[in-house]
Image (tube, rainbow, N blue to C red; front, top):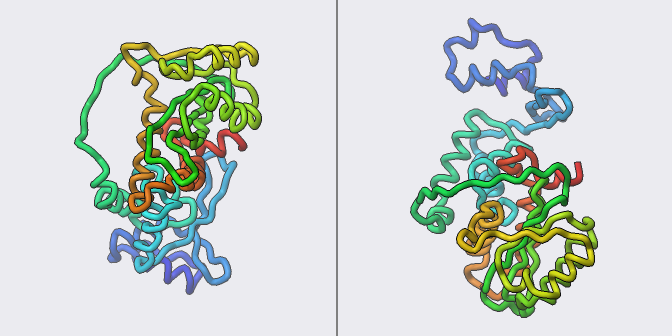
Length: 288
């Protein structure tokens, strides 16, 4: 096999020597110039198309593949995300032949994910687009819950997503009163990232109260809402809410009074995974 040949020699084998070998060996042969030894360990050097970034991927033996996939998909740091996020997370550090096929098969056969997913449905609705050109120009807000009361007294999650970078916040709160929402919005978001030009939410009374309206007026924020007939029109935050619930159902099923303690790790995993829309992680989009 090519990895073993690379370990023993810097000279690339001839095609005549490789021709009788397996398809996997031939694919490694094609990568010969990208394979490098570092301290006796074989890596693949991956470079972006424009040459601006470089990544060293450990060539993984077959005996370690399941262990890595359990870590990048099944564990708390993996988050039981879908194929693309699991694939991106795995490729950050590892490489092996047919990696994508193995990731797809692992995610498809994951019992925990399969038990959580419902039947596939196709919904059609009129789409509306809103172009944003800078971080925190527009934020989406929603309240997720009610959930089981935690030992800290929290029952809801204040969910915020920034439209440009897809940076999320998920803040456990004890109630959905307008004063609570406004206080947490200032504490966890505005005080850290600045004032958004636009805040978008559903028709909830907490977001349309006199207090919340006054806060937006005081800070010069334009407040927009989903339509009453189509509260699901903001698909981005609805999908994120489902992702939160899916994560919590997989990791806190035995003790549902501590779900709020799992949110920070969930946010870490989500922010460090490539987003399907931007192609970059929310962390990279926001902080570079």
